[in-house]
Image: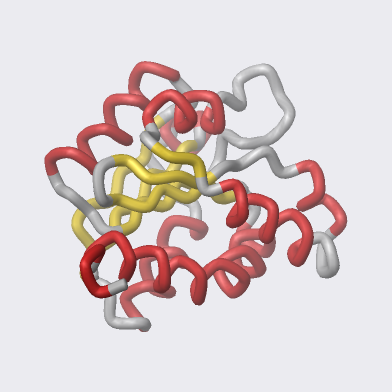
Length: 158
């Protein structure tokens, strides 16, 4: 299985310095046997986010695309809205699972606005910006994500 990561962080982008969150996500999935297609660091700009979402799903055809950052409550946090425009099908359950199960460890995850969905045969999942919240989220969504990717890659199997 393949995956891509889009790190969305204005400050890190302006300093050309990736935070540890993207690296953590990459190591998490590599340790589980995934192959990294691509990783990029971009600012919270709607057009750029949209371009990368589409490129990673349409050109690279990553099985899984993880975004992190840009899904909070500030004015510039537009990742869920951009993702919603890019996906073909919503997967409400993954976002709900993150909020409900994640809030048991960190109540701030109830305020997380990230969504999940499918574009072509790629699963897109928005993650928070905070590394501790991301660790919690990855543990929560890993199993259902694998099942979803299997269904997308083997539609006649089920």
